[in-house]
Image (cartoon, rainbow, N blue to C red):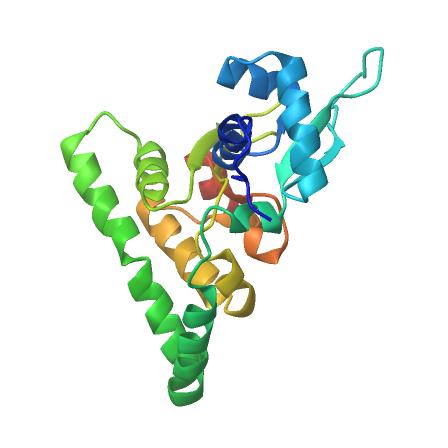
Length: 227
């Protein structure tokens, strides 16, 4: 399956898929607004992507009282859809890490994983020095996005209280490898916690079949209360 098949609609169709990749599961209305297209045009492209197996549709979750009519559908990329954007060297990476595991054990894999994500702390420190008005969370999102994770910071969705923020990574360039070697996720979570100076908790990961990697970032007061 490929997005580009020589058809005149394919560049726009790829923009639709890219928007879902960068922004996470989206409704047709949200996609239409972001891409300056009509909802009808977006739905036509979405239908084709669903037929290809690149996108899946589910009913949008509604919090609180539900209005009239059926809930809007939310469209998310499937594993096959993500494969179209990268994952070209997964087999080689898995083979290399299997060799590391055989020769150096789990500790060797963990050491590799920590070295791989060393850029997170290094680049966040440089970015905060250049742009001191950024919060550590904002700097983290920028650094991760540059690294291919399409990261954003959102308010943690707890009704009636400000429980902190949520780091959302819409894409993971090593998700297939991390499925077999979770040390990649563990090392990344450690680095995120050190940058933010607080304990963070992973709520979902693409490597384990979720649509997005989400990490709970508690507020400073909440974190202190737990201690």
